[in-house]
Length: 118
Image (cartoon, rainbow, N blue to C red):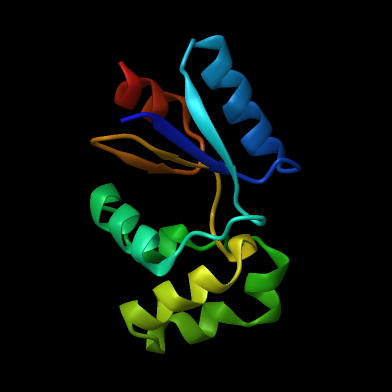
């Protein structure tokens, strides 16, 4: 399986992540999160594979998250409702997401990425 990087090109963290991958010789497929929203099925699979709480998949610092007042709404939503909401707009999803055969990493933390890719 190849490595998939789901990112937003204008995001500086995503730019740093892409640069890091290139500098470390990691071959990856690049996917623009706003142009190609993750599906509910993809998000469910990534969430399960990541072992992270679903809230970590939300871009909590994003304008859309704040405009929809999701901080207050998420606790009352079911997991299915949250996945469906995330799938409506790539800008709601935290990025970058790095997906490999045995891992899903959300956000860019060099030490985590290094451990997963070594």
